Image 1 (cartoon, rainbow, N blue to C red):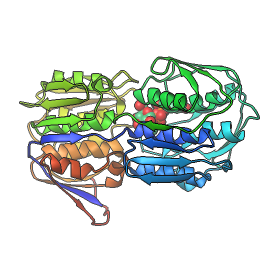
Image 2 (cartoon, rainbow, N blue to C red):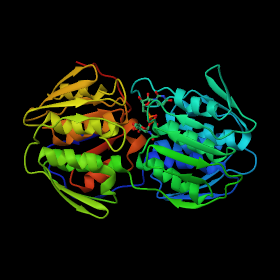
Image 3 (tube, rainbow, N blue to C red):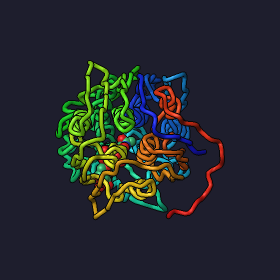
Image 4 (cartoon, protein in one colour):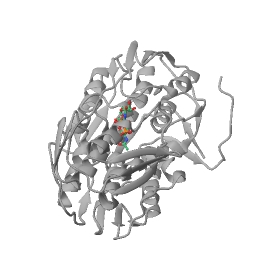
Amino acid sequence: MSLLIRGGKPLRGTVRCDGAKNAALPIMAGAILSEDISIIDNVPHLRDVETMSNVLRSIGASVRVRGNSVLINPGKRLRNEAPYDLVRMMRASFLIMGPLLVRLGVASVPLPGGCAIGQRPVDLHLKGFQAMGAEISVEGGFVKARADKLKGAEIYLDVPSVGATENIMMAAVGAEGVTVIENAAQEPEIVDLANFLNSMGAEVTGAGTSRVKVEGVKKLTGTRYSIIPDRIEASTYLIAGAITRGKVMVENVIPTHIRSVLAKLKECGAYLLEGPRSVEIEMPSRPAPVNIKTLPYPGFPTDVQAPFMSLLALGQGTSLISETVFENRFNHAEELIRMGAKVKIEDSNAIVEGVPKLSGASLQATDLRAGACLALAALAAEGQSEIFGTEHIYRGYSDFATKLRLLGADIEESGIPKRSYAKS
Ligand code: UD1
């Protein structure tokens, strides 16, 4: 599968964002904390959501998808071991560990895989479980955890990991006593998970700050919950409007969730018009250069770093991008260079010297956001691009080609099997 894009058309019109992938995945995992049925609404149609559904099925839950709603019936009898072939596909699968520990007192989950963006350990998740009294061992690539009864604890995270905050929060909900997570991640998706858990009867406070407090409860019930819109998808379509020098209205976005991205787009010279749940962008000229440093929320999101690099590659000067959240998250730069971009990588910095135009090329997406970055560059480039590795894009963007086509992009999905080609 590949995407064929003939670039150079200014995008115009309205695009509607789906629910947030990074909220849907932990919330689906959290649903197994109760034996009862939960319904989750506003769930995007994505590969990663399918993978999480299959992970939950593999441990004995029933999962049914109806439109954008997912019905999860965990039932009374869950299995404590998740299969390697599913978990390796997506790092977020590891989020079943906390809920399984609560439900069964024992869990065996393979060390996860996911995007090829550097080392992504789970040591902080495990330290949290250990602080709550779990015994942890790693055997044959599986993390095995056992805790007859989890106990509330004070846990300090060395870095504000999103996944560790979520996994520990879910374990803490079923622990005896109070858990406090210090230096917790503050992403909107953490708040969404806390709201979901509270709607099941949990007592989580402080989500969205660096100190999350969880009072353990004896039992959780099923619930119905609608997840927040996807701020990374919204940011991507705003950049699509900017990079093609068009005018795009992005609907179903919460502007406060993308403050840092909006600030940088403004600095680039974009005109922005905010509504309560929409942002319109118009870009009159080539972007001014800006410096970006990725940081945990509310800083500039690492997931928007790659898409933003495409925009800066066409800037009227030199921009500096510092990636502080993940190492090896500049895989897209090499492909941008093949389109004529001038990017130099020095450790965790990318120096992007803007050029007046990019040219279409055959391109390989190596991870989800790198795929989005290349598609954006292709939309602005002269000539045709073919992007391989689109399965990465569909992990995180639903109806990607259709939404762009509705904005006037010349984009086709091709069923040609993925072929290899030499990188220059
Ligand atoms: C989540 C998001 C992902 C986003 C990332 C950072 C989901 C499903 N995915 O990923 O899209 O790019 O947040 O915003 O929500 N770390 C450790 N030890 C750990 C855990 C993490 O050292 O136990 C480090 C990682 O290597 C990384 C940093 O912490 O350098 C941030 O990772 P983390 O916030 O955990 O990312 P994810 O939850 O995997």
